[in-house]
Image (cartoon, rainbow, N blue to C red):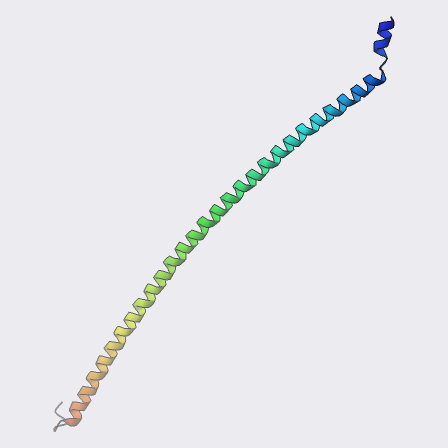
Length: 118
């Protein structure tokens, strides 16, 4: 019975060993929790980086499409302006030709001997 009593009664060394074991177990649990938190944080950072990369790529594609559309519109506008300028030059040339013909007719009439002949 003496042996059974000795096992039931913890000694100071047993108390210290149990306390140290509890501290070590708590440290292991904390280390596991810290590692899990670090892995979770790393995964969150990687997900954020991937989202940023996709967002930047989408923004670049949109900007490129806007740029292409703007270039196309600008080219069309410049083409229309060129056509209008060309038409205006043609109209001006036609008007100048008509004016010259009118001046020539008037000059011929004024310089002819018989004003009523034409």
